[in-house]
Each structure stands twice: as C-alpha cells, then as structure tokens.
Length: 262
Image: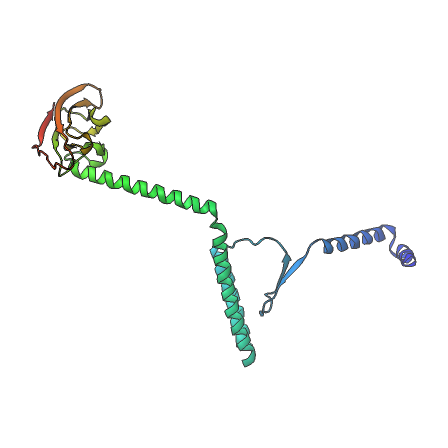
C-alpha cells in the first residue's frame, strides 16, 4: 500500500493524493450512513431508489399524474408481453390496486384520532345549536308578521312571540306612527328588549302566553315603546295573563289589542 502511495505521489503530486484519499474516505462513510430502499416495478424506468423517510401524502393532482404515467407504462408493457407474462402483469395490477386502496383507507384512519373525533363532535353540536336557533327565529318572524319594514332589519326576541293554543294568552298589534324606528321593552319574565328597529309606519304582532309552572298565578306587565334614535319614551301599554295548572286546561283567548305609537 505504501509503495502504491509513493508511486502516486511521484506521478500526480502530494496534493492530488491527499484530495483523492479524502474523497474516497468520505464516499465510504456516506454509503454506510444511509440506507436506500428500492421499489420494484414491472415497468421499464419506473424503479426508484431513495433515502428511507416517512411517507408524504401526495396531492390529488400528483396522484392523477402518477396513475396516468403508471397506466401508460403498464399498457405498453402489456402490449409487448407474451401470453404468460400478460397473466402475470394482470395479477400484479390487481394486487397493486388493492394495496393502493388499503393505503388510502389507512391514511384516513391515521388522522381520525381522538382529537379529530372530539373536534367533529364539537362542530356537530354547534351546527345543531345554530339550526335550532334558526328554526326558533323563523317561527318568531312568522308570528310577528312584520309589514312595511324589511324583515331582515327588524330584530325580534323569540320570547315576545310566545303563542300557545291551550293557554291563556294576550296579543298586541303594534302600529309605529312615530315617524322613526322604535324599540319595544318589557319587564315580563326578564325579556327586556322585545323588538329592535321597527321602522316608521311599520306594524307587527306580539304574543304572550301563560305558564303551567305558575299554577293559577296572574301576571301583570307593561310594554314600553322607545325611540331608537333619541331614547325617548313614546308610549306604554299594559297586559294581563292568567296561568292555570296543566290538568285544568282552562284558558282565555283575548282578541288582539291594537297599540298605536305616536
């Protein structure tokens, strides 16, 4: 070995020999540091060699391109194959497609972990709540029967549209003749603001029904109309509801009271 090195030094010079030894040593260490994985394929030019690493999910476009190239290579190989080799190729294609399908199912299962299931339940719960609120709002707007105003511009508290067939109830038809938008407020059952932004010349209905839980108690309440722009109290009216027990099935249907706000 020493003799060979001396000859190389005399022929090429010491700098070249040092560089060559360093290069060969680096190549030896590099080849031993990483393992390669060969992916067998029956298609010419389709065999690949790469450093082993975690699989990266391909995009839908990448998958389409890969499948098209594989299918073209398969058809070319199949056309050129002998009858026996065609049987082998067809069997390989079936196995290959089955493995692709299993890998796709497995990738979906990997992300469907406990946190993903929890997130899905939260979203489903929120969707149900929003759907219930939308249904309640739709029912309230149908009972309000707003006229003249744009329905989307008027806010109605669903508790101010409490219509029950088999209970004592009272209703009001509100006519806004004040010349500007108004709010309607009441202290009944903590409702507070019943209506917001009922436009000038607009009208709507309000319904209040008795409750079985009050067991024969009466409720007196006040409705107050306030200007949305100035906050000034414009008008007030009064209501009365008698609540009965559920077993009595007694109720009074009062005619709607017209309430003109000027």
